[in-house]
Length: 350
Image 1 (cartoon, rainbow, N blue to C red):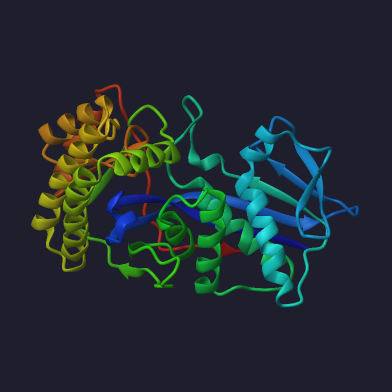
Image 2: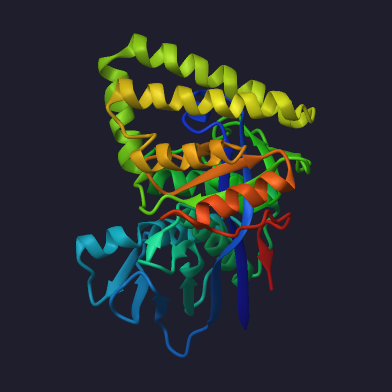
């Protein structure tokens, strides 16, 4: 038996940080995919093959409590590298046991190579861990003879990813990987609210631009939590403004108010800069400032996509001519356009 699953990555259009405080946010699924392939094993052992580890493969079993035992035993730093795999496998086993299903010995191949920058081999910040979590949970369930609905998959993957991240993150990338398209998302781990699909604004063109360096979202969230604890009034004031802008921006996108949406993107960039200055985080890094000026001079508006500091930023262009202007200007700079397309397809099983 062979099961293959593809899940798309994500671009956060609007609402980073504010989404953690209950605001609406916009996210798009994009055509970079995590791939999981599962086949029957030729022995009583399970086998993991992945690009995560310096070794080509490693065998494992489940103990009586459903915990993974690697053979040979893995070092702590190696286990941490594949913590999303471990959490997803163990949680999938528990979930399937509720339906009297089991995961027989198999070979699992993980491929997240499309989430890396080929130049320099850096992560692009497209939600690889979330895409992997969704793909692996889906593939394991299918391999066990259980086809999960997207809503069941979504809420289970949310919990799994949240645990593996130590309780951090909004889950917005999980939504993109499950459902695809452009989504209006609110945190829904407890309330179990599904994201809402939005039609793509055809008159606003998005150009993703690589800042030249990767960023650790976990690091930024840890530092932001520390800032919130020490400076609650400043945090609340800035976050209140981000929430207002995120909610208004999502409404402008829904109602196709292009002009208002572009103004909100500009204001959101400025408020993220303020948050960075107050917290000491380089959310709007030197690279993002430089790209923003290039985009502005070419007639567009710009903001980081995600935690900031690095990874990708997005140029928003109100016409195809401005897209050409932006692309030409970026191509003359040290920065690089990453050609990504929004995909309507979420998780796909083959």
